View 1: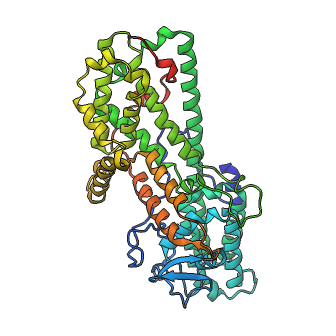
View 2: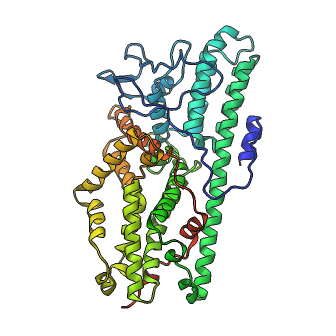
View 3: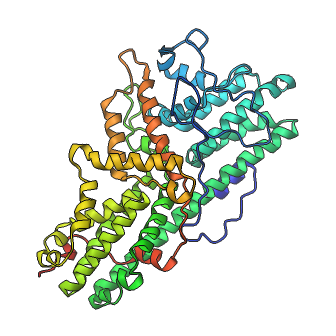
Length: 488
């Protein structure tokens, strides 16, 4: 796929090399938050990093109702709603206008609920070509030079923040057509287009490597489980404690896996996971030909795997004393995860310990010092809509914002709850108003929550990798809940 897209764009594909396990981190990141008074703490797409000086165009201009394209409606000077056509016009820069970058992020994130990304790209390209008469061979070079940096800025923000949209060859064709018009006869723009294209292909190549690595990991895990089922005694020859008995080190390696898998989740996956048919769309299916939320699903599967791994590790030992030791070990791992800010692994471990094959081991639990576990369960108590966890998450987020070291920047949310929050936000507010206009106030809030995730996922893990531990966590045999039942 990456090779085909590179040929389509006419650029050189970067060397693929050997995809090492969980070492590719080519994901885009968001720029600084908006300083706009209208949208405090709203997400922004990244600033243009090419060779063009677009500082004069990137002032987060926010049009008033009177100045904007007809069909946009404002409330307290904030964009509240609009027709799809008006919102698309609002996205496209002109000689005298560049859209607020918070608007770019919010619209590109939410627009896929109403229009396929490749259809949106087609409309954007058409507007750019028509408004600036770029399709005219005799187009005024001065006019092109005035608008080209702004269009390239928009395309760069799109390709960097929503790279996965461009796995669609139709997106690539539209991108190539428009950038070709901008680059004709100007070496500066040609270099900028090349730089943007190379960055896009690099990100898509890294994504392909990651997906290939996941397939290999899952295949290895399946093979090892099959081998253990064939020879059950092999299961007790290796366990977590024989690989590493230091809870802090194991918590660090879990954090490696969490941050790696988080980094490959595109912001659009949160929206695509909730895509439903738009009542104004006459198509029978909705976006069936578009990329689904595969990286998001893979991350949820990782949570489930870790929960079952914990349950398996606890139930495999024959002696109650050994089982109690494993329980206490994972309690310590969970506590270290909490201290790191890795709430997803923490909840997965607690979930594993609360599975019926583990919770029913009364004699084993009688030998466990449960005070630390009780504290952790209190922190992740679901009552009052996970009030305790949300308080701890806010504390970790604040620590991350003011942190001087990468160690203190780590925030890994309890992912299932994050998805649940976004789901209820999506379900609780209508996408369209009674007028038929798109409810953009809803999408400001959606974008705000997704942007927080974007900040969390770009953190580089500061801990040294231990491949032996990583391999075990990712591929060790894991039994289903029924398979872990034992009698005491």
